[in-house]
Image (cartoon, rainbow, N blue to C red; front, side):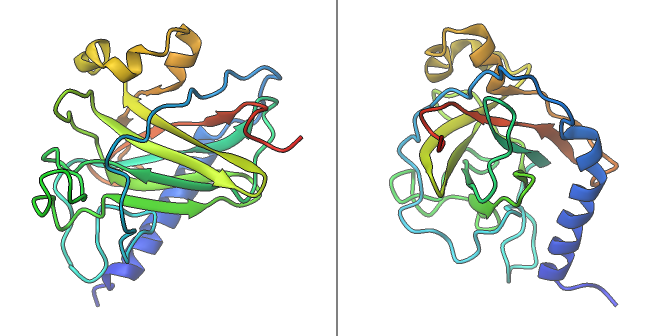
Length: 219
């Protein structure tokens, strides 16, 4: 008997996390990690969070359909500069759909893919690991492909940043990415997306560890 959408999503995410965690999460970290640069949240953070706002943005609960685009698993950890995992951090992501539209009334409202959630969030556990099942970001007018991230939680000052895709020609022309002058900090924002058939057939995957400096975390 076929599994229902929500059950299939939960099992797929759990299986993907188990398959990838050992290979992608660091086991030893230096004492001087480069902090993740702050980036603008942009104008399209949701005015109202969707009823379905879990970590799987590819399937909206109740539709029975999948979003357009290339399924992409983005995973990582939330750390301080010493490599200490920041448990209980809340991680949010939002991005445009495969056609360059956000679920936001000020961005050509009503035209976004109804099968793409557009926003997701989760609260990390003791290991501070997160994983989202979304789509490969696409260019937006005037912008390189990117995914917005926001980190908050107990004792954590909210940090908003963006993740970019390695190898995208538009990265060199993106004005917001270009404001990050430090090469090491800029590199922290750019993530290779590689085929990941062991996680999900036809999917891509990339690791995006988020490092908060002393301004954002408790002492």
